[in-house]
Length: 145
Image (cartoon, rainbow, N blue to C red; front, side, top):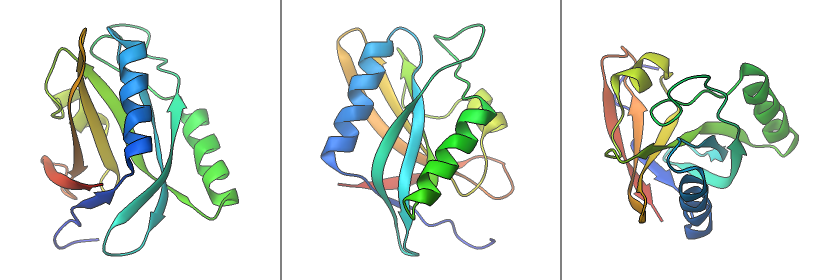
């Protein structure tokens, strides 16, 4: 890839509500899911969000894991609909909507990572991030609604 990371993710209010609902239902554990849609060059357009099961065996309040088999299933389902997996979402219970070191170690460049900060009272903030190609950190990605 190289060069500057594209920094725009278009996501509708309905999909954002679905992420909020998932984060609130999973609280105090992290939730996770896939962002599915189309990459049109200037912006990634989310068409749907698909829930995943958090299969992390420990510290589910601070960690999530989507099984590789489920990621492959998401990719196949997206291709059948002429779409792609554009990234993933997860929640941070009682923590900011910013990637952790654990998140960075397990992320891949290109993908959008939407993080919802959630408390007992509900979702407080949602931000999107893209890992730099050199994996040194993230660039914040604009959420276009």
